Image (cartoon, rainbow, N blue to C red):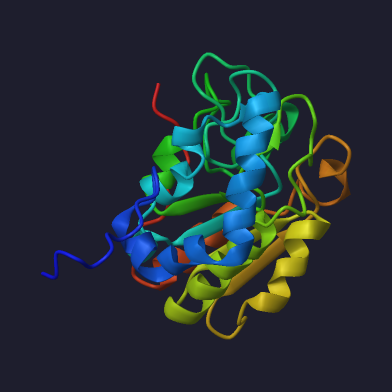
Length: 234
């Protein structure tokens, strides 16, 4: 090994298989600018999730292990909520309304017997459910405050690589912003399921009753894979 060669970039929480696919993105000008923006933000404001958890989705679900992609918008902006997995909150934190609606649909779709006692979705991520937000950070108390700073370019690249390099994935796209990502995905090679967002403002317009979870499991079983166990451990 050449001792003068630069060391590969290490990103906290980024699993090596992901770095092999998208590691070069961290040296792109837009990501350099994003890092500078985040340094400035953190000097003046509280930013969620904590830096060590910003890439949690990439830590729990290696690139080659992804089976299902759930695309959120930006992290929760309340204290103690966001930990790098879209829609998920740490144990002890009350599940927000959108997550409660997800649980309601899971129950009516026959995937879980009852509403879970907590909202931490790590067990999903560990089964290959990639819980990706479009933006990976947010200013405390200000939803969408880090939009347009570069995260969208990064996560678009993530989706593009999954689309190009993998086969038979399920993309769950809820809400108009997520639904627009369908144009990036080859529907001949992947299953794309769209519905309104599970927010209380829109869930009654078609998220409830979409049966996306049973459709996901049926697709995986048809591919010879195990279905997702959507139940959360106690």
